[in-house]
Amino acid sequence: MVLDPPLPRPLVGRLTVIGLGLIGSSILRAVDVRQLAGTSVAYDAAPEVRARVAELGIADEVAASPAEAVADADIVILCVPVGAMGAVAQAIAPHLKPGAIVSDVGSVKGAVLAALRAHLPEGVHIIPGHPVAGTEYSGPDAGFATLFKNRWSILTPPEGADEPAVARLSQLWAEMGANVEIMSAEHHDLVLAITSHVPHLIAYNIVGTAADLESVTQSEVIKYSAGGFRDFTRIAASDPTMWRDVFLNNREAVIEVLGRFTEDLIALQRAIRWEQGETLFNLFTRTRAIRRSIIEIGQETAAPNFGREPE
Amino acid sequence: MVLDPPLPRPLVGRLTVIGLGLIGSSILRAVDVRQLAGTSVAYDAAPEVRARVAELGIADEVAASPAEAVADADIVILCVPVGAMGAVAQAIAPHLKPGAIVSDVGSVKGAVLAALRAHLPEGVHIIPGHPVAGTEYSGPDAGFATLFKNRWSILTPPEGADEPAVARLSQLWAEMGANVEIMSAEHHDLVLAITSHVPHLIAYNIVGTAADLESVTQSEVIKYSAGGFRDFTRIAASDPTMWRDVFLNNREAVIEVLGRFTEDLIALQRAIRWEQGETLFNLFTRTRAIRRSIIEIGQETAAPNFGREPE
Image (cartoon, rainbow over all chains, first blue to last red; front, side, top):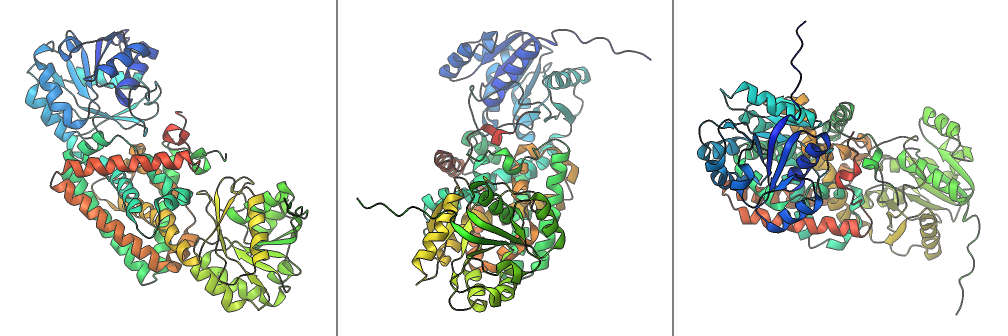
């Protein structure tokens, strides 16, 4: 039996995170706690966010510009909204060292891959990524080191990507606690359309519909939200800029899945109108099993009411 | 200043709960803990549920028939699915004592009021009710005494209802920890359509849509559910019989609100198709404020991710 050579420690010499919100600051914290980088470097376009991260002390260096941030970096992870990826890639392109890995954490992969390819030079390894983890809170104070633990991190290397580079980035995510999966950008965008993008859109939509009803006041909606509505408001409180960009950059898959959803919903409405109780009962029974599976594989808590404590 | 006369202790002489699932068993537990009844009596159509409740010891008496259950009861609370209310009312009608209060906990009030009126005799006070509380679990083991704490309990007495009877029932709910609100059955059904019924329907629907996609496997949906999807599965795991009955018995209001929801969703889909980023951003910003209000009035936890602990 041939043993793998021991992993180099630290795993990465110089690791740069650009964009210091929930995800970016969580990466810095995880890297810090597990000592995964020789030097961690942080940059954000907003001076007050840079100042806050310096104050939090979760990065070894807080850079003053994109150029300074990526100079000599081995791995650069872009944690900015999907719509900002192109501009950031353009800003860092001239300053990247040959052989550097550039990755990201955007919720859309096809559009990001295209944006990075358009701006980054030859000799840089582009390996887009997406950790399927998050909370409804934003900003550098919202992050925490265990955010990725037991969550999936999807990498979407383009065809012909450098295998050692993919392996290295995979190792970094694994060391942060994530399970790593490799798939094409195209398939990622379809999987996430149904597991994340359309659910968010529906949540935003029902909250908006409720706010606009004339026959029921907004204070009534808020008061009686424990009947189910409040579950939707959690994800409808997520960062507006990030989510606007997701929908604009994964249009085709979102519209495709949304079409299915609406078709199914109209069929369900018809079943209600025509009092087809069995159709309703069968669907409602089927969906219970899916919940059970999600709990079984550890992607959800089994605590009733999400463990909300009665006050 | 005139003081109210002290409340009689116990508040109710003989209290009967029919239907011993999540809500019924929670009432029994709350009544037990707070000593709200001289004698609590439990009945369920299923012998194994009756046996389990006897084993749990949460009722003073477990009756063998509806007739025995309601004999001499001062307050009877029906905790059966909405579609079963008529049959239960018919079964208990001949055995109710004059002046007894008959209430329920169904999620639909117009249809229940009609069903109770059709079967119950003159001289019995019909005061339908609905505690807006619950979890995704069912059955007598799922209940707990604090389920109603800081939740709203809505009573929908018909016009001309006996005021002392309404006051007594309100007091019972208040003693179980609930805030009591009085409104018409019609308004209740509209308020709950938006705060509970349509959210449940949408949750059931998206889980069904996801299960039926050919391009994304069910195991992928389960695996990557932390992206948002899993939040929907909680309420889509609720009791199928109860929810079938809700939709069949609140058809008009559900179809009305669903029409609004679909209209809004199609507008949103159009905004995505035509890349109207501002429309999306504005909606996504508006919905955050509603979440904040729900947290502020104590109907929701502010813990990120519903306080799901990273494993």
